[in-house]
Length: 215
Image 1 (cartoon, rainbow, N blue to C red):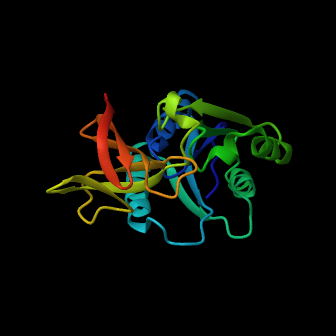
Image 2: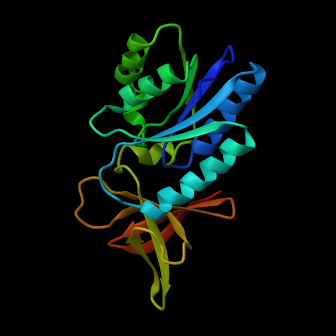
């Protein structure tokens, strides 16, 4: 089914904390312009890491798509680049505006740097790309010293809290772990978001050493 609205908006989302904000921004643009909204996620991974987490994200995105009367698409990149997948969808859906998120610490970082955006613009004429500023995953003072975050969780023990990489079996105390650059141990910063409260913990060799910041 092709959209017939004068303006067709494509929101590109990926697994992380900023997808809902991007969808809301795209929905506002679509509403203001009486345009059709499409939400797209591209999966470039060839494994099943964090499959349950991805499934929860997909469920939420589908709910938001229904709420905003949008079409939701999940595309596997296969041998194509992420940019080419976006271009293929944009052509098929006659997209006139694309919304992506600006973040230096997510897997979409390749998209928001100039080369891929320029690749999209070279392949599609008369299209606007909105690069939306999104909330940082870590405070600015930490970003240069830590690797890209991975999903992890905390476990309470008699000797304090320990951190394990991967999902929690009970989906409790889940967050993102940012490993300290240059170390072979699970030492770094763990970010927990619980009941809208954000807490950073210092992790030393897999154990919670101290609380760094709450907001």
